[in-house]
Length: 268
Length: 268
DNA sequence: TGATACTGTCCGACATTTCGGACAGTATGC
DNA sequence: GCATACTGTCCGAAATGTCGGACAGTATCA
Image (cartoon, rainbow over all chains, first blue to last red; front, side, top):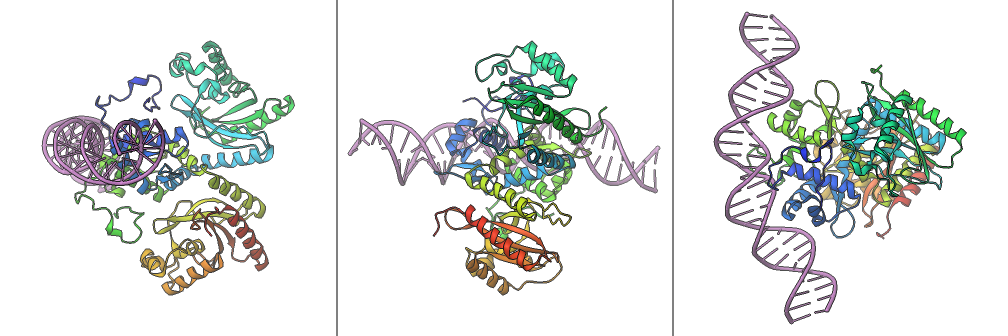
């Protein structure tokens, strides 16, 4: 079982020089435990967790009980499985509703979803992967929901091209793992093509992909900039691939206008 | 500075016999840290945190850095303050969207808010306090939003009466701290009156309060039951106090019907 | 019936994490 | 200029949390 890791930009093995032994602090175990739960997206048994994070069973019981008491985990599903608890929900809510920008992003999601009926997402980087931070799914039968929080290779996504816009070519080469250029259906994206597309996204101020991660979707992403003009998140539509060009054009303009409004001043 | 605690139903000092010294594990410090952040609802400096949770500065730095690396915290605000981070958001999202009941509750909130234009909330107990778990605020100028996650004395709320419905009288007496019967404006609720109101809520299957926690609101709460007929959460409207009786009646019926739909079968 | 696999708890030993204090650097006020 | 207060980092010592293994209890299978 591979150990969970993320947040290390480039070199996987260059993390903090952990004490070589396999003894770890409770905090580190806790972080790994929560990441494992997020990755699995289902209630886990204690021994499953122990295996996933490479911890002794006795230690895992200790930590799980501690987190249960804090309501950061709770019993869920049959046979003593555990999953995230109420406290987690409250912490996450506090994050999402703190700050003017966060609140406006949530409102914009609601508005775009209501006005267009399409699937709308906010996305960002997490480690060297792409994640959906929040979304409003299209109400129609054509529901294409990628899971919030699931890690996806950057080259599979329109947002990914925008989110790398601040990097140089060599930086990108070092940042994106080679295997992430392989699409789910087995096709490969050439690294050089990808670099060109990143440059194009930077120049145009948006990015589009179609039939990339799957055959049925047309994705368009617009940058949300933080106070230093850095693209910290993207705003996206996920459309059925047969959406007529004229409608796509309208939606793109709406998306660009909305994302511009959400961007913080400060960068030039 | 008082030490943070919750989850201990009745006796505050009867917690696990902590090792008498003031040395604590990283995990315990972490839990206290996150609770402090939730309670303060604003980015905190490391030394503020250290004071709030009663930990040495050096230890607090260690833990904060660890949580920053895991993105459970992030830099926020000026001067190196920290607040909840992206990972927290994802964990919380995973909690809120796991399980059929959770998803249906979120949809119901959206629907009720859209149909009525009123403020709607889901509430529950956390330790011996009441908290709002999620809400949709009324769009009108009359916005009465209690903060999600903020701990409120149980007797101040309509939901509180329902959430104690499963307890006996002595149990309630032991559970609710005496000071929680004091309202924000200084008035006192008599414990005996409160017990009667809990019994009434149990009998009627809903609870209403007006001008209780503040002078401007009429609250109505309906029970959401888990598989064992236990009232684990409530669904509530928070209305302007001058809402006409007929409309209140309509809203109450809507609320009761919605909450009944959300309740799980299993209890008789 | 016996063998195998699993859960949840307990315990002693030891490596490690926590702690307190020291330190340099910065900001502020007088 | 000097005193005060604060931040962020570093260090050695010692208390203690983590670990591995043992244990009883349960379930499954042949």
